[in-house]
Image (cartoon, rainbow, N blue to C red):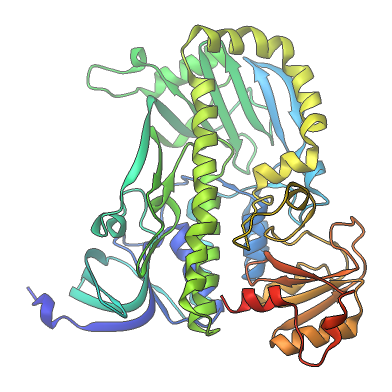
Length: 518
């Protein structure tokens, strides 16, 4: 066996450990932004199982920035909405597409299993001249003042990688997290769940997410493209298990046929699992960062898990590029944990509470599922978009309403309601749309009816791109403002065009300069 101390040492700016969706997303963004990076994984290739299934609108926008969205669109299935059912009776539908048309270019619910997402991202990386070092298992991390040395067991023996930064994208059992001693606190759901990728499914509303309730049961299904092909998820009761703790698939098929009149001919994947709700105590440990399942895990309610990891990776990779290529100070990297950990905590808390309610075996939960939902469900489905607002509801589920704090001073209540600062840039359709400008993944100054000469002048003084658009038809982007937009598409700051000091030679809005200084 080769001596680890004499193993070849590779040098890079960023080492990504883990080539699942989050790690591959980070690698693609870094490649686009010309950051030197190595990505390694102990597996021998991309995931073969379907696993995560839904790609939300916000993730589609990121795929668009990377030039990969056309392939996603070509390979995906589409869910046009979600239906709520009591047993086999449909109570109502939430039409997501209609609610999202003014919010994003991608208002559908895209169904594209994790294995296909990974293949698209691997191919995207290869198109940029980079590949994954498969069959490299991380066995050690040695932090130094200006770098981290990682030790791997590779197919040809030990390999050492010296990197300025390390990204742990290596899943729920993250070696990076464990080697850095980062706690992963949370709870494990008391129930076991089954998942079946069904062929020849019957009894489901085709092309829709199905949410089916019974007094003592729950069934979720997601369309998987071809007619009759669906992901079916349900609760495993103790009585279902054999003495050895196994769950016969035939028993599951019998139970869902009896309780929900749902059946299927065969399955390409059938498994059981326990749900965990956990968030890492910190997302940054010196020069090491956590993204995706290494940082947070939760239930599949709402199809949020893989998407949250993709957006972690996107956020972090843009910050790393700002420092490594853009020359920003290292404090720019502090924003990653400050921005993404609250998102994960809210998501885990929400999905934990929601899944706890719908799977609880308490008398109250039985009453809600067996009596309240059949009686009130149709009215609730009609009122929910009116009470919350259809686009607002879509924004929560599609992850397009996420907001980051861009200043140490919290916004007032009116600012939080009306401002766009800290939010992903509102979509302004047109030819071109303002989202077309985001494909460069560079810092930009935008104007929407503001004087073009002023927008160009401020951008020139800052050394960033500028883009001028007609006044925003939806009125969220104001003609009397100019906006500083980050490479990840979030609005970092705004300034009034009426400020006379902006016309002084060399003057720039102070908030713009603060953001670009990290």
